[in-house]
Amino acid sequence: MKLAMNLFTLSAAAMEFSTTASATCSGTDSFQTCYDASSGNSYQAQRYGNTTQMNGCKAETGSSWNQTSRTIGNITFHTGTCADGNFWNSTQQEIGVTTVYNGTDSQANSFSCFQSEFFSTC
Image (cartoon, rainbow, N blue to C red; front, side, top):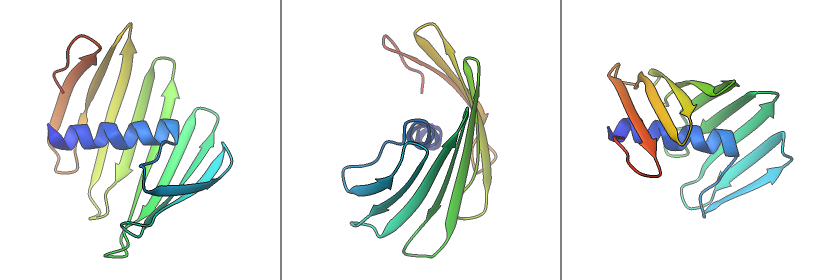
């Protein structure tokens, strides 16, 4: 389930353009470029309409990753390619105060869990 939580963290970052404490970002609400000085990693986030695209580069290896998130109603669809070339996907559905996650991680393992302010199976 740790892989699934990593996907949720990345997805949340894409949807909110959030950054870690060590990343420095510049740009607008629509387009940002971020650099993490502690790791040397960088990424770009672009938002248009109900879609957010992120592209990043791992400094150690020079490999890149990407993620696209699209929200339709109360469901957000996430797809991505990891730095190792493996694909993953997930859906995130808001139902009242509960969020339901379903998908396939980059190792082709299915996952499903629920999260709310009162409980979490993630």
